[in-house]
Image 1: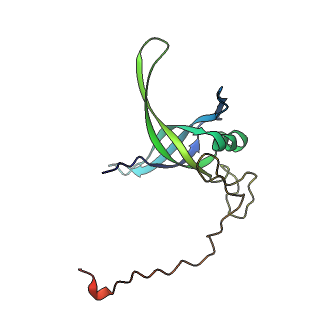
Image 2 (image 1 turned 90 degrees about the horizontal axis):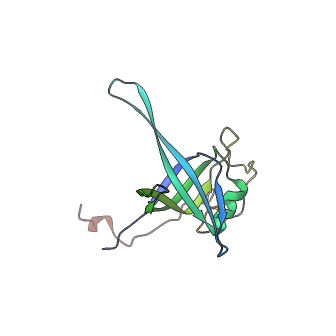
Image 3 (image 1 turned 30 degrees about the vertical axis):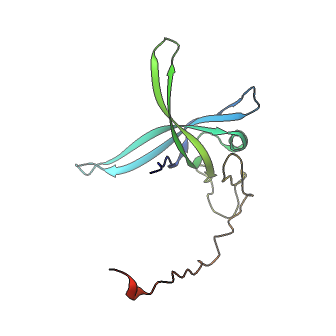
Length: 159
């Protein structure tokens, strides 16, 4: 059986992204993304738990990150988990987890107008490694749901 390595995150950028261009010409953007979950504990007290994720984005999407993403921006990230192992400056073996983003959607500026009227100043950026959709494109929003036929009569269903 084939495995599945897929991560979906919605959170806020923890700091301005670090952008590097490699000798090969590839560009990589690294930043942290905070996801917060709010819940009530056993005593009924409201608690918030924040997880920090290390995000890595390559090439075309790294260009979008470089131009438009800043600390505090809300993002949707789709990617995969990458386990890393390295030796630090003190010779200690270290391990960590990084999310390699394959798609990104900018959700609107924190504290700004997040309406879908296209009032933001940056493009929508969905896609894999830079396959971006034009700003404000939401062609499926007002389309009716397609009608599907299964070719199966309800009387034929086993339950």
